Length: 253
Image (tube, rainbow, N blue to C red; front, side, top):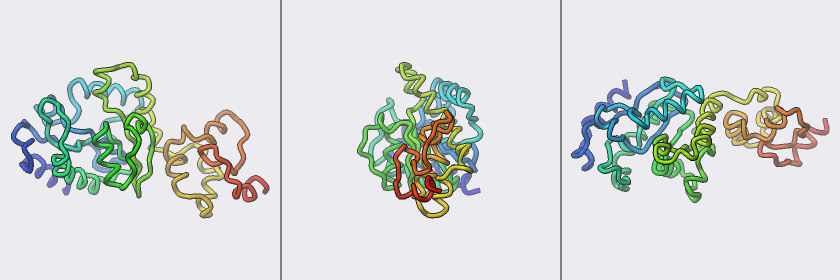
């Protein structure tokens, strides 16, 4: 299989000096037909020693986050931007990212996930640049915000290991990770939502459906009002904005 051939090249890679200090180059693992791909920055000490993704303390945190959200490890694909451990946990150098990211590009092409979930600053920055997206905001402002990129959705999250150093935002992180399961299914109101009809009729852009109806539907104002039984006009977009040109189509029928 293509992924096996790719992994063989990763394990024997010597393209940069990180190959001189690693124990193992860590390949991606998980469901090769996964709809979600997690992209961490690089292996840690435990991962380098065993050649396995997310083991040790950070793996325990990830497992807890998954258990809380109902997500299963074997339902996703996990990989790293850099396949070798960074000495003394230093920051990655740009030439290292440029050299190693070609493997990630191949993984994305082979697995072809719907949703890319970069964990941390460097993975997020790389994926945003790869898909020609603006990277002007600070990373903390991007965490938990779903973004549409061509045929992919990008959902940046904080790395589980960050809780090992500061657990003050544990509840917030749990909320962000809980949305992973939501992203795998459309809003339960989608089939009867005016947004579906407007999109099929070409009256609203695809992004409204992909980012809300088939994405982060819990943040949709329409969804929130529907759940509470509160009135909302057909002309209301998922972000709460009223699109007046839709009023005669829906509200005045």
